[in-house]
Each structure stands twice: as structure tokens, then as C-alpha cells.
View 1 (cartoon, one colour):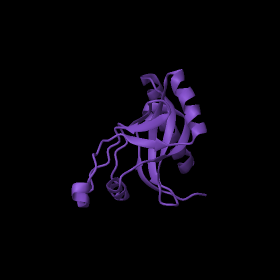
View 2: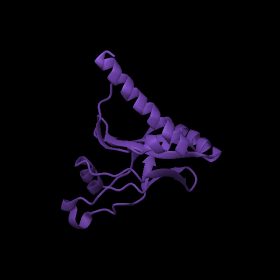
View 3: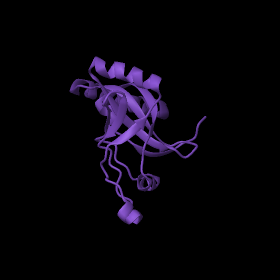
View 4: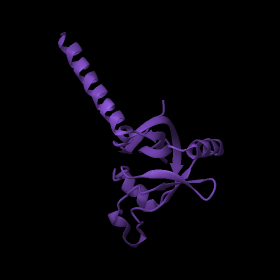
Length: 153
């Protein structure tokens, strides 16, 4: 079992999207960005991944705040970052994204056992309001069911 240290999590991903498949990708970062991530500072809520210029995958709108000790060598907090995936995965993603109706959403960002920053992407379809209400009902029913089973009645 691989151990990893989670840095950030996108709470809205499972609420706004029906995640059909997850994949792991590497991410190209600057040194000050990695330092900022080690202090658990990241915002994934507005982030999304997309294709650019043929067969390259990029992450847009992920906010990593500036690292205060980097001074002049700091980074732009909302810059476009390149994602690293295998060619076979990339071709599969291109096929599914061009079908239409699918989006690549970052679900979580973490350090793997070797200390590299990885991002978990979810291939998902946007939910409609009625689907979101159904998710809330199901979650509340599961809580109520657990409460009943815990109390013995």
C-alpha cells in the first residue's frame, strides 16, 4: 500500500460532478510552489484541467499562494501548470474529452512516498440540480441509517 501525504482536497468535485474514473498525474512546479505546498497552502475549488496544442495536458486556475521567504524568486499564484501523464493515458483522455460532456477535475493533490507532488484527476460529467438533491438525500439517509443501527432501534 502506497503511503502519501495529502496536501489539498477539492470538496466540490464530488458534489458538482459525477466522477466516473480517476487517474494520477505528475505536475511541473517551481521550487517556491513546492515549499508553499509543503505548508498545506493550495486551493483546488476553481481548478480544471484541459488539453492544449495537440497532446499536452495543462492545469488551469489552481491557486498556490506565494511563499513568503522566496522574495524575488517567487511565482505567479494562478499560473498554468503542465501535467505529466503517460502517452496511453493521454490518448484515452483525448478520446473521452472529445466525446463531449466530460471534464477533467482535480480531486486532490498530495506528495507520494518518493516525495514527488502528484495530483489525482477525476474524469467526470457535470451534475444537474436534481442529481445534487438526490446525492444530499442519499447522504442524509445513510447518516440516519447509521444512527438507527448505532442506537439499536
